[in-house]
Length: 109
Image 1 (tube, one colour):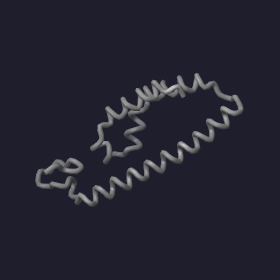
Image 2 (spheres, helix red, strand yellow):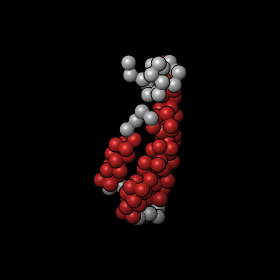
Image 3 (tube, one colour):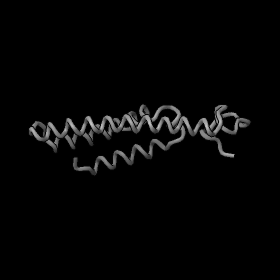
Image 4 (cartoon, one colour):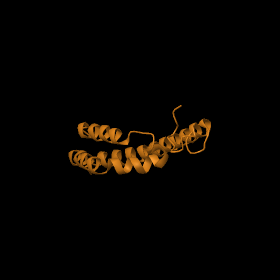
């Protein structure tokens, strides 16, 4: 039987002494919390970018270059911080990090 998430005790089939339902609920809460944070930040950033763009206060090419620079340097740290310890244990963070960096590298801004 697979442990969810993995635990170190072979006798603990559910991992860390929690039932599967408890893990599913915790995971759902974590994902919902992350989605809410992401949505709030997207709205705020969209409003900021729209205002700056409409007033010609930003160089869009420079912003896109800065996004690529920050993505390459900091995506992994942000992912680990935002996912939290429990989700980092069960998600392939390195692959997700590379996918995000690649996406932002190709994005024109």
